[in-house]
Each structure stands twice: as C-alpha cells, then as structure tokens.
Length: 434
Image (cartoon, rainbow, N blue to C red; front, top):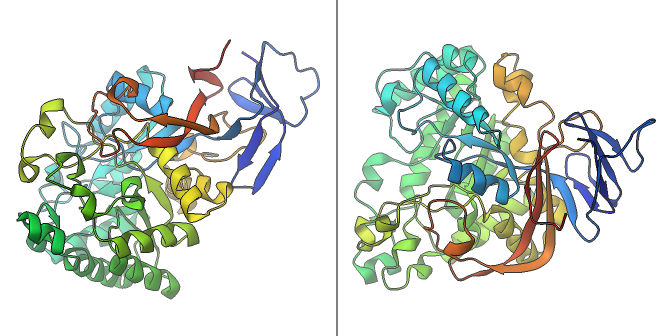
C-alpha cells in the first residue's frame, strides 16, 4: 500500500530534522519527504497534523518478544525494533536457538527482534560460547544478561575472543558477591525498612574491572543499566579517555528513587535497584549530555502473583515497552531537554548498536537488516512512530497490552500517546480514525 502521511511534525534526530512536512511511503520504504516522487499514486492518505512523526523506537532490552502480547505491547508503544537479552527460555547460547527465536519473531510480522547471544554456555559464567557462530546466526552482540561470570580470567578470555571477531560485548556492571542477597539500594531507606542492601560499590568495582579489561583488550563494550552517580562518573571518564564503551539506563531510573519504595511496595522491586535522589539527578543529566547513549525499557513482564509477595521475595523487573516513549517525554519536559534530543536516546542512539557489527567489518544477517534503523530518509525502511505529544493518559492494567502489569507507574498520568506505528511500511498499530 502506498501511504501519504499528511501534515505531521517530522523529527529525525539522526539528521537533526524538525519540521512540518509530508511523508510518502511505497514498497515498505520512505519514497518521499515533503513532496511525492514522480508518478506516485496514493492508496491512503492519513492526516497526522498536530502529531509527531519520528523513527520507530528502538528498545535495547525487552524480554519474551515471541509472545503475542509482548509483540502487541511493543507496537502500541511505538517500538519497531527490540534487542532481546540471552536469558530467554532456553538460553540463547547456540546458533540453532538464535535462528529459532528469529523465525518465531518474523512469523508474527511485528517489531523486529535483534538477539544477543550468551557469552557463556547456559549463562553459567564458565565455558565460552562459539561467539562467531552466534554472530553469523544473527546476534548483534554477546551478553551475560544479569548472570555473573565466574572470575575475571574468564571475562578477560571472553573479551579477547569477542575482540578477535570485532564483536561487541554487553555487560551489566555488578559485582555478584557484593550484590548477593540484596534487594534494595544500600542506604537509609533500606536500613529503615530492614531490607538487605546492594551498595554502589557493587556497580563501581565491576565497572573498574570491565574498563581495565577494555584497556587491555580494546574490545568494544556496551554497559547495561547504569544506576549510580559514581558509575556515570566512571563511564564519563572512560569516554573522555577514548575507550570503546557505550552505555544505557532503564527509563524508570530517570524518575524514581529508593524513597518511592514506600511501605514495601513490591512494584518498585527492580534490578538494578532504585538509588538516591542525587543518583537520579546525575543519571538525568548524563542522558541529556549524551554520556548515556540510550534509554531502554528493560521490559520484564511478570505474572500477577509475582507481586503478591513481600518486597524481598518479589521477582525484580517491570513491564515497560508501552511506557518507554511516555517516560522519555516526561523526562524531557521536566529536565528541559529538546524533544529532538530526547528522541535521539530511543532512536538514533540505540540504532548505533544494531549496525555496529557491519561498521566493525563483521558481517551478519542482522547487520544488513538493521541498516538505516533509527533514521528517516528516502529509500530507508518505513519504520515509524507517530504520536501525540500533548495528550496525557493514566497507566492502568486495562490499557496495557503486555501480559505483565508489573510497573511502578500504575496510576501515573504520563504524556504522549502513540497513534500510529508502521513497520516496513505496514500499519501495524493504529488508534486514528480511519
């Protein structure tokens, strides 16, 4: 179908475009901007005046993406591409498992799924996987998810192996021994509630180790889910030094602190844990100045009974695909971040991690498919998110398409409603009047 998106505010952080112009789509790609190509005949015109037309959002951490409910949640959130961590069932530690996941995801004709392969067999932290084979099967990088690695010698060998093939390693900086048994950030709130704490040092000691090994190996590392001011400072210094590191933060860490736990509200049981107000403010500033490259949802849908337990016994995690855009808009409004810069953290910024393999000279199935992600330009795939920035909605289970309704933002009034999501030129989600 040939589409004409009429009168929208087109914002493309990759090209610093922010202007009202029409968008023309044919054969799954953007055929024209501002004016239609010669001989273009429209099958459907969609009035998107007063709406923002942006590249489809890219979420660097979302789980259970082969479930119909989570695929629908992604589209309702304007997310057209997701990175799937390797802690799936089964663990993505073999090429055939990666190919099976991609096949199931493609069969659903929804958001594109880019898997991360397991760094070690079974994520047990001991035996390295066949990283080159995982990359050839379509993995955009290697990761341990939240699982620890047995020792630093194994981590060094993993980085050396990955570096040999030009692969990116995605690491969650947390010292397993210091974090063991902890359920909340160490500090006054955890002490008052009698909760076992996870110190900031669990993040910073792990970061020191990772950064030193990056210096030794030169391997590119993406640091997942920073949570502390001290951690941000270390990454900022590493980038200034020229180390090949990037990082992301979960959207809930832009807004919440450990004070929000209140009286043991299990909806706030997250991993990494919510920290203090200063940590939150430093994270917000780092997302604004680009020290933090991307904002993700860290989408972890859980069954309803996972929250009907005491705080310390609750499984950590929050559903977030449908909240990602709204939480980014809320942060942009409160922190006075220009909309184009805020959208960069969920479009152009994370897109760099999808085609990084190609730029490093390592071909993969996924790298070709990811070309042009996070951009709006003639000839590129028409993966678009069209949203109404000034409309507010109240987060409630009835409005969430995800099977998991576990989120600390239930009852919050948030800005921004997605009205139209296009994947490859196909209208995959719509709440506009036809």
